[in-house]
Image (cartoon, each protein chain N blue to C red):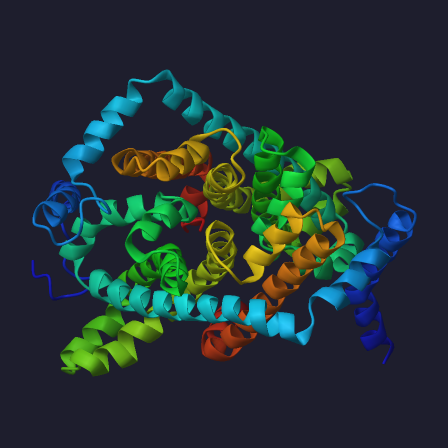
Amino acid sequence: MTGVLRRLLLIVGLPAALIVTWYAASANSENFYAPPLRQILAAFADTWTPERLRADVLPSLARLGAGYLLAGLIGIAAGVAIGASPRLRAAAEPVLEFFRAVPPPVLVPVIMLFAGIGNGMKVIVIVSGCVWPVLLNTVEGVRSTDSVLSDTTRAYGITGVARLRHLLLPAASPRIVAGLRQALSIAIILMVISEMFAASNGLGFTIVQFQRSFAIPEMWSGIILLGLLGFGLSELFRLAEHFALAWYHGLRDAQRRS
Amino acid sequence: MTAAGAGVARVRPAGRALLGLSGLAGLLVLVELLPRAGIVSDRSLPPTSRILAALADEAATAAFWVAVGDTLTAWAIGLAVAVAAGVAVGVLIGAVPVLRAVTASTVEFLRPIPSVALIPLAVLLYGSDLGSTLLLVVYAAFWQVLVQVLYGVADVDPVAEETARSFRFTAAARIRYVLWPTALPYVFTGVRLAASVALVLAVTAELVIGAPGLGAVIAVAQTSGAIPTMYALIVVTGLIGVAINLAARRAERHFLAWHQSVRGEVAA
C-alpha cells in the first residue's frame, strides 16, 4: 500500500509543485504576456466549451486522423514493396533521403498550389510529412528480416499474401511502429501549421487568432490544450503499441534475461 | 542475382550508386515531363529546367546567401544550446536516482507538447526576430537530446557501476568513466535526431513567423507568385537537410568507432 502511495507521490509530486509555483508566482503578475494562471484557467473553461470543441478541435482531429491513417497505409505499402526488392531500394534511396530531409512545413505552399486551401490540402500536407518516417522505417524493417526465417518460408513455398502476412509484416512491425511514433509528432505539427496558413476553423487557426487579437489568457489556454492533446495522443499511441507489440517486448525481455 | 529474393540478393556498391543516380535522374525527368506534357499545370509544378534556372538565379544573389546564413545560424545556435542543456540536465538527472524518479512524469508530460504550440508565444515575446526561431528550435531539440541521454544513463551496466563504487570512485569520476562512455552512443543518436528537428523548426519558424532566413524567402516567393523560385528554395532546404543528416551520421561513425568495433552493434 505504501509502495503504491510512494509511486503516486513520485508521479504527481513534481508536476503539482510546478503548477503550484506557477500559480503562486503569477498570482499578482502585471506582465501583459504572462497573466496569472488563475486567469488562464478561467479563460480555459470559458474558451473551450463543448461547442468550441466541436467547431474547432473536432475538425482538426479529423484531419489529423485522416492524414495520419493515409500516411501509415501508403508508407507501409510502399515500404514493403521497396524493402523487398534490393534493386528498387538502391534506385529509390537517394530520392527518399532527399524527400525525408525536406522540412515538411515548406511543402504547405506547394500543396496549396495543387489542392487549394480546403480540408484536402491539410490532409495532404499531413500525409506528405508523415509518410517518410513510416516508409523508411518499413524499408529498414523488411530489409532486416531474419534470413533463416526468410529462407524457410521460401523452402516451404510460402509466397504472396501469406508471406506478407506471416513473415514480412511481423518482422518489420517493431520498425514500423517506431516510424509511426515519429510520424505522430510530425502529424500534430503539420496539423497546426496547415491551419495557421489558411483555415477558417481548427486549433492552429484559433490560437493564432487569439494571439493576433492580443487575447493573451485565451492564447495560453490554447497552448495548454495543444499540450494536453499532444500528451494524450502519445499516451494513446503507447497503449496501442503495448498491445500490438506485446509479443516483441516479451521476446526482447526473454533474450535479455538469458 | 535476382530481384525477387528479398534480403538475399545483394546489389554491388558500384551498381547501387548507379541505380541511385538513375533514380534521381528519373525524378528530374519526370518533373520535367509532367508539366510539359500538360498532365499538371506548369503554374503548379514548373519543369525541372525552370526550377534549376531559378536556382541558378537565386544563387547569384547576395540575399539568398544571407538567408541561407540566417537559417544555418539559427539552426547551429539552437542546436548547440539544446545539446548543451540536454546533456547537462540528462546527466544530472541520470546520476541522481531520486531526481530521476521525481522528474520522470514531468519529462513524459512535457516532451510530447508540440513545439509549434509555442509559436504564438514566440511571436509575442520576440516578434519576427532570431529569438522566435531560437525558442522553437531549442524547445524541440532539447527533448530529443534529453530523452536519449536518459535512456543512455539508464543503460549503465550495474556491475561496472558497483565496481566503480567499491573502488571509491568520486561522483565526478563515475560520471566521466562509467556513465559518460555508456551514454555517448545515445547522446549521438539524440544529437542526430535533434539536428534534423532543429532544421525543421528553424525553417518552420521563418516560414510562419517571418523571422529572417530561407523560410521567410519561401513565403515571399509564394505570395509574389514566383513559383519556380519557391521550388528552387524548397530544393535548397532539402539539400541542407541531406547535408546535415550525412554530416551527423559521419560524425557519429567517427566518434563512436571504438564503440561499434568493441560491442559490434549499431548505435541506433
